[in-house]
Length: 357
Image (tube, rainbow, N blue to C red):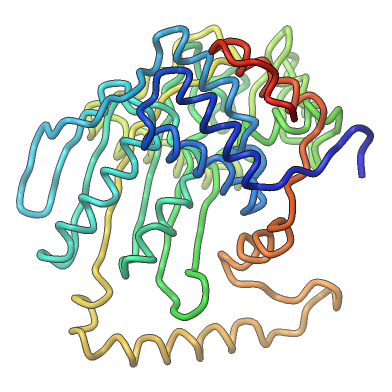
């Protein structure tokens, strides 16, 4: 284990995060939801979207970029389409409400699309696909991320930042097993993973940062600068094209925009969403759900029967790494000293004493 890294019970981290957001002015239910979401991201193995976000969220509150206690407003409601304005409220509040609305409409209509504009950072996008799957709905979720200080990704063939990280998530129920889950940033790495590597003093596994001079680097500091660099899109021109469509469908179609003015900063930005939910029951005609479950089980068995290239690493299906991480981390979550210090700083900013981590 790296120097200074300590293990914390998940319940303790939830308690500390909940207290911080409550002291920052969030209603009790909102503070609980944010804390639960962040710690669950750590449990799922995505430290980039876990409690490392506590300090950026508190700073965003202090700057007036995000506001506590704001429920999204309905701008437009059609039979199978809704547009919500989050009014710069917390992203977890807005995204949970939007996901639940999409599922509620899809329960009647079979499928539904909900667009959300002007939300705070929604956190780990896959959490909402999991939430829908638990209700019996398949989902496609697109998210763009206009930031107060500019973009994070260089367009394919370019050097400077022009685009957001713009993640995409998809989910499919797979009872009784955890759902199929796709959750990835259209940047080569999520910016949060660069923050984790920077906090730990580690290099990135692969060179995915364009330094200011245009050379590729594994050093996360080459991204943050000064002078600032840029992230490259995953998958070359294909990831770049997917990124553009998150801006078109989640940002521009929702009315939230896709503005990434320079210069770039390390500030916490906001999100716009497109959530499309499909009722598995409606799609299969109700009784057909049992047949679908059998087909999914057979499909999963066929895919994972492939001989692994590395015997120590069996073939996994999308969503299984998160399920495995939850089992492994249930007893404790590892935090580096810098992240622990940042949580203490957040507590101090909202008038709490040392959280005792």
